[in-house]
Length: 205
Length: 222
Image (cartoon, rainbow over all chains, first blue to last red; front, side):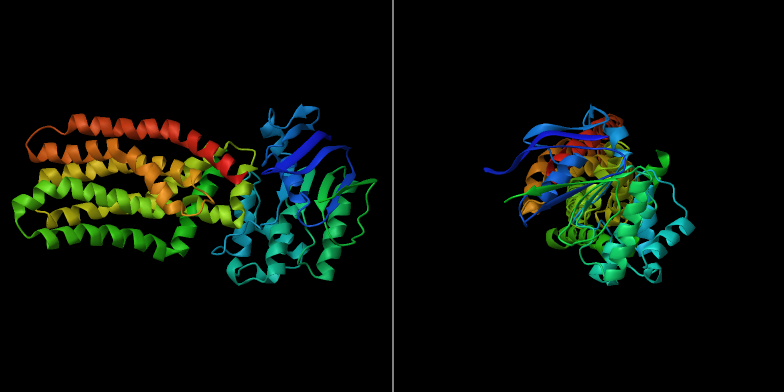
């Protein structure tokens, strides 16, 4: 269970948001909406512990995420703005190595299946450098088919994706949620994701 | 946990292999800078061999510095650093793997090339041997200390210069003991004291630098 209490974020002298509080349980989907620059990405980074909040706490199973960081992080998958791909590695190498670097022992076959799930298996042996924006995004998203993490924090996962891939990803999110997972995501698109409970937070700039 | 360490090491070595030109830049820098001195100063063996320890050590130090700016910068730019920070394994572990990869790619080749350059400086066999040992013991400290500077200056404009200002003063002990070891053997004294101190520098850096680097990375990413 993810609990956020009284969270506030400041960038420089500007207060982006304050008093953000919510609770996310198994099967719950949490949308963070808002204009560009309203602090959506900052909120997501705070949830991951990449950024320290100005005020407030993030709790995982009632424990501060900073205190039990190791346990929290093994339950977390984050995909940010940046894809985290190395230009000089192939799509397959990128996927397997980034999974293994977080302790997830994946085989080549499993990684190939993940790439196939989001329809980029044809690019598996191409260096990330030559892939299009959408293809890179899909390679980064392929790790959602490998991870066993409960909580997914996704920053604009649908950006740059074609319509068919959006559907595939939405279906994968639905499947994750129906298995008791949780997801926090920002998006500017209307995508239907099946979830037991859906909450929405609208940040205003 | 071992698997993670080896994966990070392998990934960085593979990347270095795919971008060989970056590695070559470091080595050519070392080769050329240290070859320019004999050309500029003249072929007097006595003069050359007396400046050799200092010149070779400074060249090795600057060459390592040149490549250190890239140690975390590309990971930072493409987002893989964020992912590394979010791995459940300790960040210090991954930092040591990255630093080891840097040393294998930029430090070790300098150690291997050094005797070749040493010949240009009319270094005797004993001094050449001590030069190799001193570089072997000292260059890991350079990579480790440099990693702190690289992490602290991530995402800062003009980071290269800032990093030099931060890191070069910290290199002074390593430079003194390293060059001192070679000079001592040239004068027929034992280099053991210098080499022991050099090894101590590296061990101390191995214990402390990854912690400092990890802390600096967390601040930089925020």
